[in-house]
Length: 122
Image (cartoon, rainbow, N blue to C red; front, side):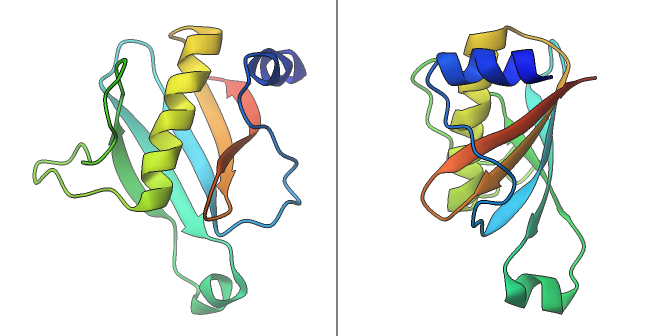
């Protein structure tokens, strides 16, 4: 796992420890050859934790080169929240650094930057 994170950091991807301040965090499931990435996210602020909401499930489209992340992968093409747009860009960077592999990406977003926390091979 550390080797994968080190390769991502070497490729210029923002990597952060899990203790950094975050607003949203979760896990993105990347699978070889799929067009959508499954994301389970939750708000990790005090208000979000107090609300007790479960994880929000999203389908984030796999971005191609120069493609902008603005619509979700559901049948209504729902607009993505800003943190999901940043996450889609992060996932594109991870794929560029590691190739098209089956990965579970743990991430955190502080409202400005989406950062990689850890990676697991699926």
